[in-house]
Picture 1: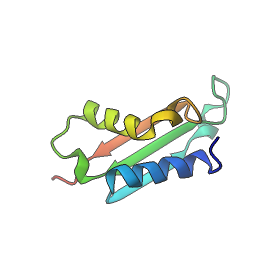
Picture 2: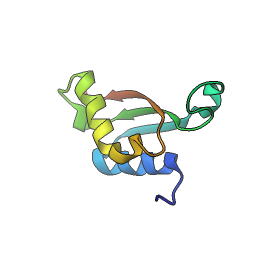
Picture 3: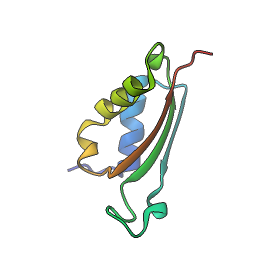
Picture 4: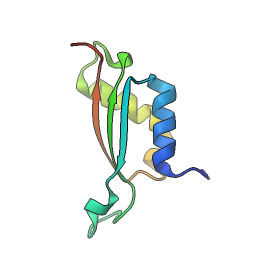
Length: 88
């Protein structure tokens, strides 16, 4: 079992996997009261990294999911991803 809060685990894994130039991880659990996973496990990630250069959005999302691996079944109920490269 993980001892760090999920938001910190997300941030640490994404930092390690992608060395992003920008990273925002927001807990949006408060927006999801009244449905499955109510009040917890809803996160929004905005990440900018050279690792995403040349990758289509779907591939970028898959890369993020892979980096978060077991958190997708243990702590994350829903994840909104905005993954961009440093390219103009």
